[in-house]
View: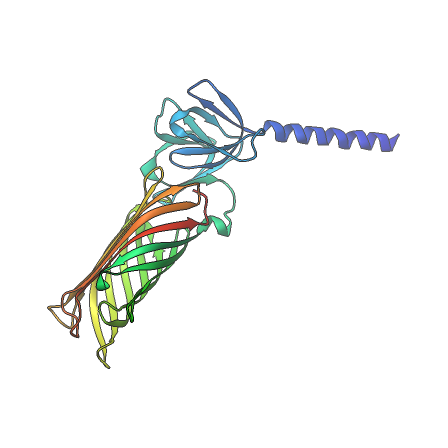
Length: 344
């Protein structure tokens, strides 16, 4: 008798647990009158990725098509002042273009520009902070107006306080008996301070046959300000000091100089499937008043099938007064195809 009582007690607890889990679901109400029951897997500033029982993968629904949303589990909203707001997700037609968090005492609504990140209130995994991208392309370079192949790799690891990234780019071609090439390697590390100021350190290794440059080594320390700092968009300006070391093909000497630097960088989404990365750096030599350098990079990518992209990339480097007799300008125009580890 005791065994039967124990069996039915366990069975009842199992049924209660199953029913509780089944009822603890999210609800979406669309402007077309549809009601969807399931689970919100991910939310961005323009879409909700919603998993239902009758689909093996999540379906993406535009926020503009949703009248109301109710979540059974908590969400974490981190605003641009690095303040966390925890509660249930709230979307309703009375607050268009706003995302709300319902806490124990009230409901707080936020505009997109005030949100750094919105996610489930759970511990983040390494893959949530890590990004990896690979691309290959076809390039026209200034060197002999040549066509060449290119290969690129970029990675980044980003938290609310630390932002680090590595980028490698290589262009190569053979014109007659001459090898035409251009290689760059960059490692960047930033620590975010209160009010979106940050310390920045950067290492750059660069070579270019067009500029007879065997290798340029730059070591930079700077202070910057994030004008926009969100998960989907990042705009910053930085100023600092650069130690510059250069070795040229037509000179046995190593040239050293100290430079002042100003950088402006934007990286993020322009439209739903269109991303832009733009970077401009101005270098002014303290050792030679007539020498200054510019480095400009523009990268536009169209994202499709969640992980793939096709785009164009333009790079321009100028040097007003190289320490040896060589070209003072080098450019590359690239059409490329890429893949990213993260689902878009």
